[in-house]
Image (cartoon, rainbow, N blue to C red; front, side):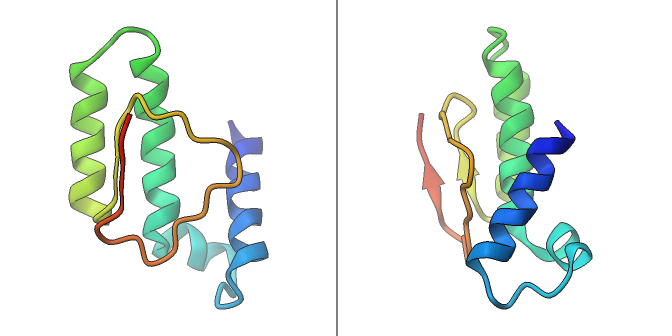
Amino acid sequence: MFGQLKRDIQVIFERDPAAKSIWEVVLCYPGFHAVIFHRMAHWLYRRNLVLLPRMISQISRFLTGIEIHPGATIGQGLFIDHGTGVVIGE
């Protein structure tokens, strides 16, 4: 889990020259937050839970402006920059 978080942060530094520090990424990048929420929701969704992952997805959408369906399969290295209004379906 922590290895995946480290990789997600590393990808942001590789693709966004404006990223200056790890704390900035962790605290201020809504695309990073949306991916973290999605990984939690997707984990639950794959265990045949439906309501809780959808609730997590909606909370994430409210907080970040980015909606990722819990059933969506996203690979490593996803970076969403300026993501308001981004929708990733199942």
